[in-house]
Length: 448
Image 1 (cartoon, rainbow, N blue to C red):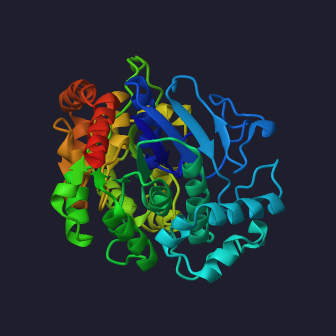
Image 2 (image 1 turned 120 degrees about the vertical axis):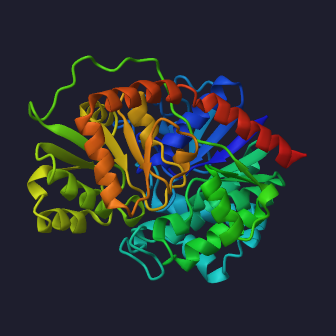
């Protein structure tokens, strides 16, 4: 079976768990022998991609989509379309304009299936550098620039790739690629499977962006099958988007466990400091204010605790100001966004990882923490809580109980040791190969 997979991000360019999940899933699919053609909206620049061999400009296809492969991904081919402002150094705006016009001409079924108005089609054929990169009407704080135009452009160019390639099923990750999945399915006649890693209700609560919700709902109703990362997410899909439960299959995320052992020496910031870690996007969804609320209560009991907040997001300024207003700013360290070895390094410094998410479809970070021998405290409002037994759990809003459990781990070495040892054993059972095999089963259901 060959899969046309549509993703918006892939290491090293990731903003969260979506890119990590795409990496783990495609790598595992390659290992079990499933052929994958992974289409990205932008090329991975060579100066940032030490593990990617890029094609030369001369080997680019007529769509402007580079084709390349990675070591360890023998059954995966990567192609990129220069969506939005991601024009390659080798491509002129004139050529880009011709590519979009060609996509509309050669794949009119895609434009029809997407229901793109003629005025928007005309705009999409214009000079991409002329687009205003500032926030546009109808976008939210989560999506800088004219994300919706980028999504439509990616959909049209992905549909053109779909006319050139042979595949059996289309797999689209999250809302930014659903339109591309619909377009590719329209021109190829192949079934669409969409993978819901997060919904607009997770990201924005009850204050949803209507345009994003409409795209999500359109994708879900068009797809032959839907993959949800947890039963928590499946429940949102069925109740909020009106999808029959038998159309939704749960496939949990996992982690690459490379068999490495944690270091015997963990270097603290200060000799007597305890380290409590928050790692994730600093947005409403992740509950940073509840983390700070619990931190204040912990410091009233144990003063030598350092709270690290690793990540970035639209609430970063407000969160820093909140820590200062609480009088705990000197005990909270904001690192900004971390990637690669820096993530592993900060995990190995921590005595406890806390994920106080308000609504977390899954949550890969706790698995990463456990694989690095760090005990975890997670909110009950997370998908990962469905699969973890040896993790402390608390309602995201209950900062008193959150603080009590943080204090218990920091004060009681036997509890910390038990969580470390059993957590490390438990996380070994969560394999991307199992997740990949389950996805293949969903593909087979969609093609029957």
